[in-house]
Amino acid sequence: MRRQRPRVNWFFIAVVIVLIAIVTYVDRFVLPTAASPFIPTPTATRDPESYATQAESLFNEGKIPQAIDTYLEAIRVNPDDQALYISLARVQIFAGRYDEALINAENSLLLNPDNSMAHAVRSWALTQKGDFQGADDSANTALQLDPNNGPAHAYKAFLYGRMFETNEGPSIDPIQVAIEESNVAISLAPNSLEAHWARAYILLITGNYEEAIQQYKQAINSNGQISEIHLQLGTAYRALGVVSGDSSQTNDAIQEYTSANTYNPPDFRPELYSSRALAGIAEWDKAIQYAESAVRDAPTDPYLHGNWGFMLYKKFEWPAAAEQLALAIYGGSTEDGEAILPLPPTGNDTWSADDPWIASYYYVYALLLAQTDRCGEALPLTQTILDYFRADENAVYNAGQAQDLCAGSAQTTSPTPTP
Image 1 (spheres, helix red, strand yellow):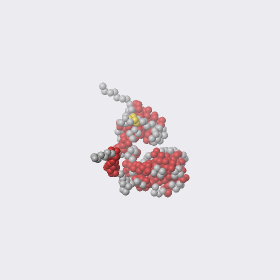
Image 2 (cartoon, rainbow, N blue to C red):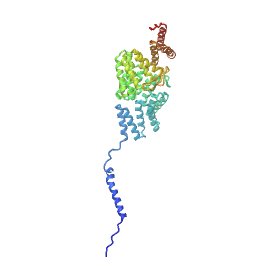
Image 3 (spheres, rainbow, N blue to C red):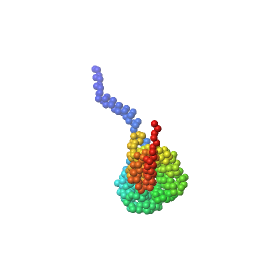
Image 4 (cartoon, one colour):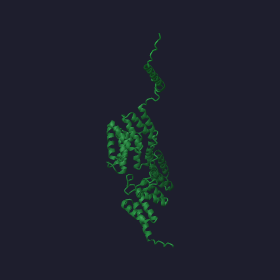
């Protein structure tokens, strides 16, 4: 008898093949990339507090943009930490990012409306934005919550100093409050950057230049890479040089303005202030160079074109001076086609009508037009000067000089041209 061959179980074979394929795939492609439970992960989870520590260290090193980025990362990791928002807002004010600072100070208040420091930093941001009433309310709230908050007193000193300088705000006699608050800030927070800066600022605007310089230096010892402090220190040196008659102070001022420009290159003020400091000692070539650099930083600002034109006029470079002064007064466009709006005698959103340099742009241009026999343009301009700058003795005098030049020119008989 013949044995019958067993039937092949094709289903079982198919299952075995599929299992073999799965095992092979896992062995070759999955296991090599899977982390072992007994081996630590390559990147350990970072402690959230380390971000804040690193950000503070970066700020102390003067690396303000990096400090801001690190504080933002710290907030991303720990969004409920109110102190992070306050620290970020403070650094943003040093960087001139006032709108962002205000938002973050208010974010901190959403987490804790009774945080004295959050109200204080909010006050400082509002001061920088020119909202003096809002800043005063926040400063008072901060000090009600914590009367011994040294930085809050410093911020209030800044606020009242600004009220004094601009003659605006809710206080009738702000400078006395500013002086008192700056002294209190120093007594409560003798190692605070803001306390020394606030005291220096109040000393500067009250004409105590030597003391102001010493306070600015102490602020710089805390953090030497904040542009605004170097800018104000340069102004203190320049003012001291004018009062004392010591021209060497101008060199110190230029050095501080250069430092300010190094730490904030887009800011045109270091070059603008440098040009005027050098004009004060009649170094016109250098003054022209700095004035031109300021225009490169903000090519559509008519005020800066006027400053450049003024320096060129004093160097007797009249055609170039006329071009820049015309851009300042009547507007025009840059080489790239960007619009330059006119700078009216009433000032604009950036420059106040109280700025005496605006009047100087007008009367220097009127003199320049009269001196080059362009009296058809000069005389209407002199009338504008007399209408808007009547309180400025220099402006009225020079407008009269331009009118006299044009009157003398009209009386002179022109020679008959040779055929």
